[in-house]
Image (spheres, rainbow, N blue to C red):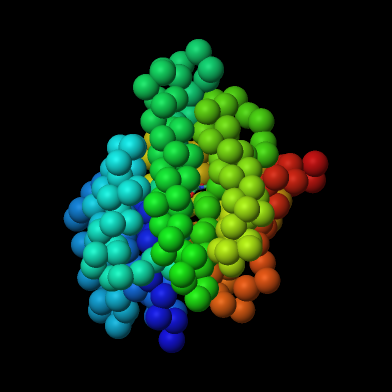
Length: 251
Ligand SMILES: NC(=O)c1ccc[n+]([C@@H]2O[C@H](COP(=O)([O-])OP(=O)(O)OC[C@H]3O[C@@H](n4cnc5c(N)ncnc54)[C@H](OP(=O)(O)O)[C@@H]3O)[C@@H](O)[C@H]2O)c1
């Protein structure tokens, strides 16, 4: 069993929830971060029922102080931080003229600043871990250029740059930094658009392998990258998208 302590952001739903359950199945003790306390409690109860360990860490990552406070809470409660999965994100599809200053700042704060400062706050703990790993969850939008995705896409492109730059800088400390880049996955994130079911049907047609993904299909890859067997892998951006970034089927 894996004795490490992980922090998973956005653990109350979707890819983050699946990832938290998956890491707990592997034996890790998982700190569950999100704003909705009830969702974190439900995930913690499901993990306990399956024989795993986790603990809720309600927090709003848009607050500048949140990353430091989270790491302090985990160190006070568990005494170590070995794994960070930066999965939470703000997501709005809006054209350049529609995006407000507040929305822009919120996307950068949640999708870029919080992941950076979570790692920074945890660095002493990560450096003393026997197997430290940071997994950032990007998006196919980081490398695709589509209407309404300027701000979301730029935050994910920044996260991928951060992955590789931090991986290079922290390799001598034996802190691995990797990234998973999902294509369209059936989660609540699509409720940000007016008709999420119609959007998923539309996205499905754009995936060469003919369907959208399920949260567990992303969580499994996060699990592989966190595994000690992956200890010669760093700086990798792993695309798990049914071929989405290759273009529409038959293109
Ligand atoms: N689903 C897709 O098609 C897709 C495709 C590519 C990439 N991704 C990426 O996958 C990741 C997970 O998204 P998902 O699809 O699983 O959607 P989701 O179910 O909506 O998950 C997003 C999570 O982030 C949390 N969150 C959002 N803002 C937060 C904040 N300010 N502070 C703390 N937590 C916050 C939300 O919880 P609370 O609301 O309770 O805070 C929620 O649990 C994201 O990084 C997303 O960009 C998703």
